[in-house]
Image 1 (cartoon, rainbow, N blue to C red):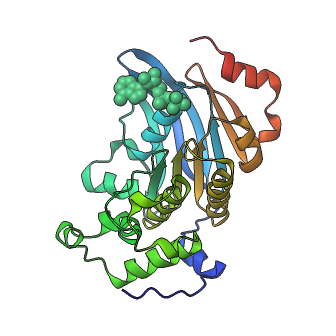
Image 2: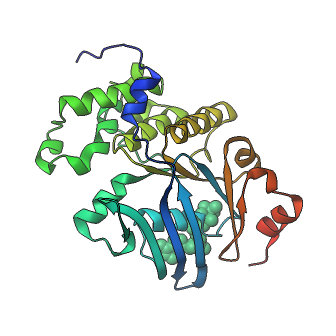
Image 3: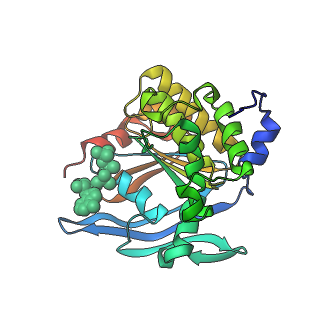
Length: 274
Ligand SMILES: Nc1ncnc2c1ncn2[C@@H]1O[C@H](COP(=O)(O)OP(=O)(O)OP(=O)(O)O)[C@@H](O)[C@H]1O
């Protein structure tokens, strides 16, 4: 297979990544989640998520950060409240009510990356990225790896943007963690999302790779995508995020610029008793 080694310009990337207006892309209203052993994991959470922002979510382990992202993406059902988004012809709808195809379509607009990358180890990098188009391709076509030329060229451009094109034909299992995460980001961007949720994307990475991934997420936000990222380290939030959402005791106890994260708030976030 021939892979053109052309440099991808920022303008081309702008056209690859869907930039939307700078208004709210999502509204969480009185959002609650209960698990059998945790009836109040998240209770009455309210926030708006805006196009082009890089929102970091922090809170101690078990505070519900991953659950929150999974609720937004529709991977988990809510226990109460609503998640509103402009979904159909600008109409504001509650995405928690979506079923089947509509839900799948929402998930591709609100795509997600994970700490453990979730790549298919035996497939090559390019195919892993094109799998991001799975929702848009018939099952039969995807079974036979018959992605369209447009999908292939989009995947190649994204890989080049992430400096991963030289690895396009290599099996994903041979990549380093940082490289796998860059491929996972390309796969998420194949869906043309206007929201990108990142669940502890750098938890397993060294400082150099952490910088690469966090910088890439900032660039994606810079193109108008609303990025929401769960992080363990307040230092990372201060360095890369434009907004911090701090969760403790099932509620948002801080929502503002990283400069507002003072010792008292950090104490509340991390020393709250279970
Ligand atoms: N599918 C599930 N069924 C029951 N309980 C769950 C489920 N998923 C998560 N939980 C519980 O919800 C709580 C919050 O988990 P969650 O992963 O959202 O926290 P977190 O803040 O992301 O933690 P960490 O930083 O350690 O990843 C945990 O106590 C967990 O056991």
